[in-house]
Image (cartoon, rainbow, N blue to C red):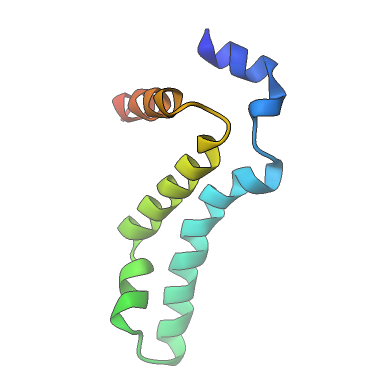
Length: 87
């Protein structure tokens, strides 16, 4: 029901570019670490941020920030809880 309401009100949806940020941010972070390692010694902080796990977590936080202005905190939490139950 809530999903149907959100789909009806497109003003709550992020732009296409904004919706791509959580997808491409982890890819870019991992790519930076990989390319950096090809040419030079990778600093620990870059190595940590470019790790698959942390890059994905950063992507999740980016998604939460994008939802923050469009959905209430309760709606965001519900959405993430439903997504986590599916895994």
